[in-house]
Length: 134
Image (cartoon, rainbow, N blue to C red):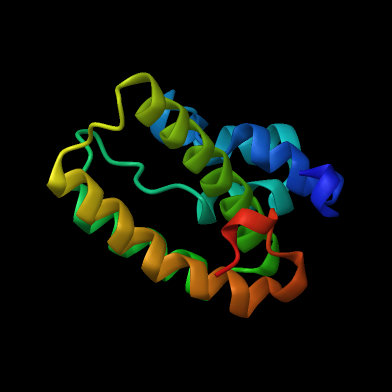
């Protein structure tokens, strides 16, 4: 995050971006510990606070809307996370002889096709890293 010109709050939010949905830490707790700016970024990068989680497509549509309507900080943290996720996906594909279900491939391509133009619009030259640019 810091290598991409991120602030300290953006770096903290990047480390915490999954704790709400994956660990169950509340946004109130994050605000108490790290302040409102970090909380706003984490909230913007959280797909769902609900348990059980809604269906994947519903979560992704909500997430896309959050990034579209969020701050530049939300877009930057999200873009760094999605870039990291793509690296993990490529490593996983290599380890599994490139085998992914056609539905998984279609879902992933659809999602990134929706979100990448938003990153480019909101971040311009700050869109991290180069392999996320179209």
